[in-house]
Image 1 (cartoon, one colour):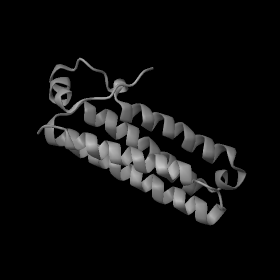
Image 2 (cartoon, rainbow, N blue to C red):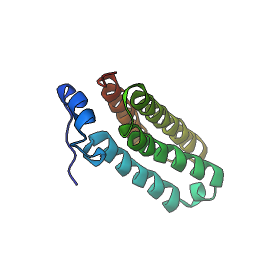
Image 3 (cartoon, rainbow, N blue to C red):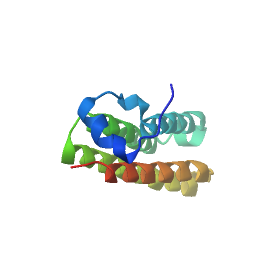
Length: 132
């Protein structure tokens, strides 16, 4: 699946005509890829996989990013922007949870943290382009 960059001038037209699918949004695709990385981290590490509440929380937060992008994409105006802001907040939540993983389990999560920070910034930038 290929993801495309959305220009500011395309945002309003795209929303009105629905000629693009949400799956073509880069932020959606990057979010999906990061969900897989979170699942791999929590599944493949014996010490973290036993911490059920932390695993569940970090998985749900990462899923929330993609789910809110998807749900917001089908909305209009303020609702759309609100869902993207929630998705950005969930990206920040994942960063905080990865910091906890790093401190408690001494597992290097810096690369994942940076990926989620970048995704959060991209979501914020995209939501600023949304015309109300």
